[in-house]
Every structure is written in C-alpha cells, then in structure tokens.
Length: 301
Image (cartoon, helix red, strand yellow):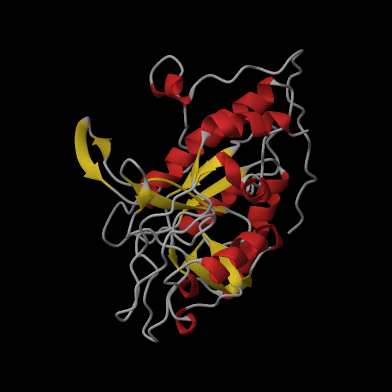
C-alpha cells in the first residue's frame, strides 16, 4: 500500500511566548483541559469480535487529514507475546508515522505488576513496551509511591533504546533488591517511561458516579492531560507540537517528580521491581511536574 506524503502544518505565529498558568487553574472551568474521544470500542454482544487493533491503527495512522489529534491516551494492553511479531512490527511502523506528524502516543503500562508466565518469568506488556510510544506506570497516595498493580519491566522483542540507556543502566547497577535476572531480559526496552496517579478515581457512567476506580488506565489519561497543556503552550508560542516524547523525557528527568518508594508485584514468590532514585520499571522517571516541564518545552526550538 502506498501512503500519501506527509504535510507539515505550521502553527499560528505569536509575538511572544505565553506565560504558563499554575496547573491547579486547569482543574476547573473555564480552563479545564478538553480531551476529545477519537476512538472508543466495546463488545456490543457476547458473540462480537471487533478488530480493535485495526480500528485504532486507522486512527493513529491518519496521514491525509491536515488536522489530527496531537495526544492519544490508550488504556489497553496485553502480554507481549499475545500479539504476533509481524503485527507488532507493523503497528510500530504506524507509531513511527504518528510521531513524525507531531503526535504523542501514551499507553497505560498495565495492571498485572511485573507479570508471571507459565515459565515463571516476568511478562512485558504491549503496546506500552513499544519503543515508539510512552508507557505510563502508576503511583498512589500523597506523598506518591509506586502502586503494586502497575506493570513494568523489560521487553524481550525490543532492545534497550539509546535515549534511555544511561537511566536504565543506573537502575540496574545501583538499585537495591532487584529481582533475580533469570526473571527478565535486562537488555530489553525498559518501560514505563513516566507515571501518574492510578488510584482513587471516580468515573461517571450513565450519570452515576462510580468511586474507587484504579489502574494505569487512569494514569495514562491523567499524564496525557498534562502533555496536552504543554502542547498548547508551544502552539501558542508559534512552535510545533512535541510529538514522540521519550527522548525529551529522558533528557529532562529532573522535570519529573522522582518516585523512590514502593514497587510492583512479582512472580513465583519473587518480588517485582522496586521504585528507586531516577528511572525505575514501575514509575519510569516519575510523575510530570507541570511548572518545570512548561519552562522546558518552551525552551525547545
């Protein structure tokens, strides 16, 4: 299949950069962040067999429309090997194309801790473990600590990425109480990349509040809202959207709230990964600090 050439849509010019507001201002109208739903799927009947992957790929790989959503938050995941390698590689191609259009893709890391396979090894998740998306882990409480349900670890299909190499090497060489290496591929792409609160959410369904909702499915849209605001700052300053986030994230680890307490569940009597100073496989480099990140994104070309 031939794809049409990508078109660059310049943002509107502005004479001077905007002044970022405190993040708390966006928690209430009229400044609350709008996050339109562009793709939603559910099984309409017991015999339904929707192809959610194909539908989601069609939305993400839109190369013809001039205007596309700049942030995608996806609360979906599965064990790495439940998707064929061919499908995963083809999907990665679409992820790369999305990044080249200035689209940021954020995926919930999962809610199964480090995971446990029949072979008694940790199970990395997909698509959060793709090298071309931003995986979002989970925290809980104030002060924040890693939440045990949050998935994270090291991929078997994709190698460690250059933009995360130093941070991951530091974790493996300095963090205390790391699981036995027989449980995971220490040279694999490490995820998640960042985290956000994953407990204590209230979801409204059919006008009825449902309290006590938890999971990284809550964390991913929370983090996405912050990056939507950061995109707004750049566009208002006449700059492009952030696009693929991971190189920026690891170059600006000090702009995130480092999570050093807690950890995720493990496998076969072995504890999962502990949170630690710097990057870790439960909370990534930490939770977004909007005020610090606002200055960092405006300093970019």
